[in-house]
Length: 412
Image (cartoon, rainbow, N blue to C red):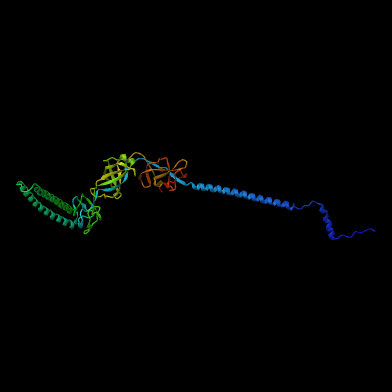
């Protein structure tokens, strides 16, 4: 009888169905160790990539910062060129008007002011009385000196009588020669005493005469410093001020500082006109009276005096004016903007930029001031490039970046 196989359960069927698959190759991933190595390699690659990117970025930023710092360290400047202008047939220079003669009047004796006779602005003539001083002490000294002189004169008479008497007695040998000589000597001494007394009286009379103050020359009274009753001390070095100031205002002296470049054109006797702002359109004719005949080493100018007649007193001493010399110069002049100047301890300088954009501080000699521009007598050429509105920190040999200046910068 055939053996019957017992029926399989559902669990057995599933087991048997899976078993044939056990002999197939495995479809599972790599081993855990292999996957760890791959993961570490990927992380390292990411880190290396991030580090390389960071280094490149930092290097790029550093280069950019260095370039920016270098660019900032080189200042940008605006430059212009000096202007060349043709010479003028008329030379115009500033001048100061001064009185032809001016003197402070001091007292020559001590006392009190009785009264003054002239006030400021008064036209006075030479020898005219200006003030009277009361001098009681000097008056008493003069009276005493005169009395002493009379006493000495009386003694002189007695000495003369005695000398004559002893001279006659000597002829008869009634007295010795020594006694006669003593009397003669007493007479000579009395004569000397009288002469000394006369000199003292004259001194006090001269001192008393100073109680009246007179004008030393014709002119105008420009200052009065005393009033009646004021204590007067004699001498310029004494405590107190001068009594008056007197000025001769016809003619006037006009002093002009002529630049060295124009000094050879200035001759004594040449004509010059003086103009003042308060008299527009008017010119006052003058003449070059004298020059210093030497150039002042501090200013490189020639001190020149121009005398201007002032009969009507229209021109006032102490005024400022412009002096127009008839012949100027045909030499072209160089001018620069006034804002191109640099003031250094060594003197005025101008910053010049060469073809390599390097700064050179050039010393200059200044002529006339035209307001917005300055005349340059030496130190520059028309081909030079000068910096306008230069910084005080500019140094010799410094590198700069040049930018063209606008037309308005030259007069800013």
